[in-house]
Amino acid sequence: MFNLMADYKVIALPKLESGASRIFMLNKAAIEKHYFLEEYSRTNGGVTMLATYGKEKPDIRVLTRTVVSYLDNHD
Image (cartoon, helix red, strand yellow):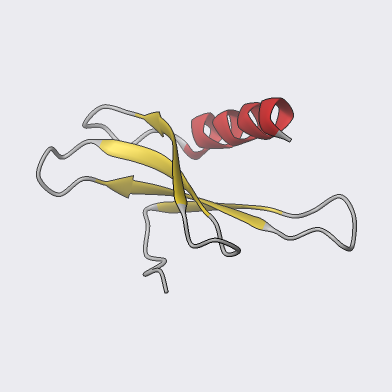
């Protein structure tokens, strides 16, 4: 099970009732102090890295644009 603590979470709800929601979270690497955006899969327990950011926390609007772009290109 994942520890779902993060600076930001973006939850993408399915278009169809039969689909599953998807969880994207902004985390920070403890050692490097860099932020990164990941998707957490509830079906296979995997994690997919979507983007990395610098030491400054990105705006939530930047993250949502990244998630929408990712979903448009990988769905």
